[in-house]
Image (cartoon, rainbow, N blue to C red; front, top):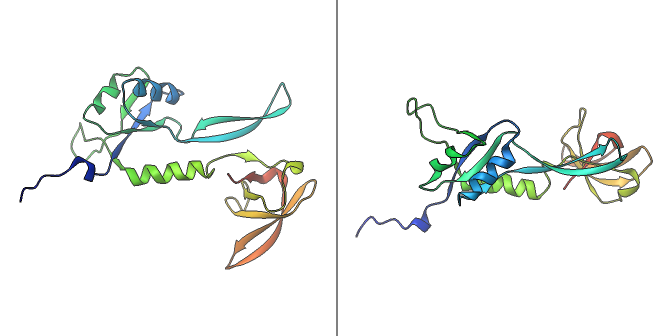
Length: 181
């Protein structure tokens, strides 16, 4: 019996690429144009537009200057891109170290969290939220806590959160709440 390994049996591996400052989207585009698979984790961020006095949503990279490139035999070509600074490497193998491999399962977990809205920074607007909507506390002692809206008000919401193994009602000001997904 031979020790032949089918390339389909090997899980894909990703490398972490560092882009030049404020160039992660441009760097991702350049690497994509080389025919490589690129994943740039992004979040939706909502902010009040200063001149138009309305809320606007934009997409921003989650990792300021980093993105993932699917490992191929030609991965080193990414270094030739103008907006790419370097590929993260391990220091164990000497000065030139090997690229740090990121398992496909890890990238898939990040992608699932992104699709679920885990990283989003979307504000809760009083009249737009309904009982049963999912929200997340974005600031203060309860930051990161998720719950569902139990009652609405003009300046605060009553939400149900799971604490200490049971459902607890708590009142939270609108300005520190974010939509969950």
